Image 1: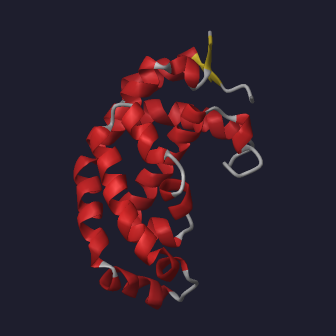
Image 2: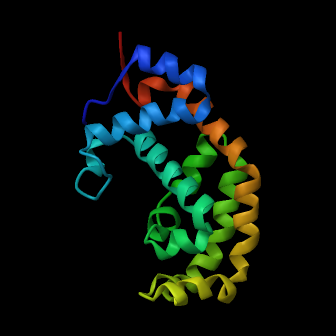
Length: 168
């Protein structure tokens, strides 16, 4: 396991700035410990909670930017739909996100090959019209993103030792 270290002063400052800054302190420290980007080689250097936190941030960023179609097209589909990410959210107490990912999984299984295919920007833009089944999932995520992120921040706060060593 890689040592993930967060300075107490950075944590206190971020906590005062809000949940996004609080989470960012941990994700930055995790990324720093693994050399900047999560990949198959360095994944073994992290624990399940650290990986899940990085996964949530990737999910949030992708879905908020371009929805589940973008998430799947950019290659994140297997990470979320072929791994126990949804169960991790349930274990973290984020049941609504668990349900959302679970429902979306059905459509991922049906359409992922078409969505993941290489395409031009114009063809990518057309994917949204071709796969409107993801629209409700996108809308639900956007509507509840603040609650999801707050629940993630709360979980991290309650289990800090799973995410980093706090240095005085």
